Length: 231
Image (cartoon, rainbow, N blue to C red; front, top):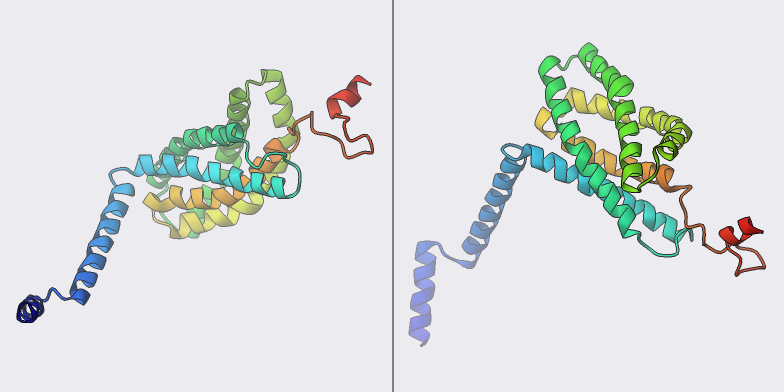
C-alpha cells in the first residue's frame, strides 16, 4: 500500500496535478466563469441586466427604509411585503426606460467633453428626471389602487421635495456617469446609486401612509387615530 501511495504521488507531481495545481486551476475556472457571466450580462443580456438590477435595487432601497422605520418605532411589523413588491415592480418598469435612454443619448451625443456632459446633465435634470418622478408616483398610486385625484394631490405635495433632492444627488452623479463610465455600465452604475436615493424616495412616498389604526402614544393607550376622528 505504501508503495502504491508513493507511485500515485509521483504520478501527480509529474503531471502537475498537485493540491496547489488543483487550487489554482479551480480559481482560474471560477475567474473565467465570472468573466463570461460579466460579458453576457453587460453584452448580449444588457437589457435584462438593467431591468433586473433596477427592480432589485429599488426593492432593496425600500427594505432599508422599512428597517429604519421599524427601528424608529414607526412600523409595527418589520416589513410590509406588499409595499416592497410595489417598489420592485416600479423599478422593473423604470429599467427599460433607463436602458434605452442612455443608449440613445450616447448615440446622439457621443462625445465626453465638458460641454457635451453638461448638455446631457441638463437634459437629464430638466426633462428625464421630472418625467421619472411623476411616473414613479403615478405607477405606485396605480398599484395602490388610488383614485387619480389622490395621485395628483400626492404629486403636488411631494414633487418639489423629491426634485430638489434629485438635483443635489444626480448632478454630481451624472457628471461622473457621462464623463467616465462606459455606456454599457451606465444604467448599472445609476441603479447602484439609486439604491441609496430610493431610501429617501421611499421615505417621501410612504411618510404619510402609516396605518391609521396604530395607537396614539397618550394615557389612553387603546385609542386609535380613527377612533379620535370619530370623537
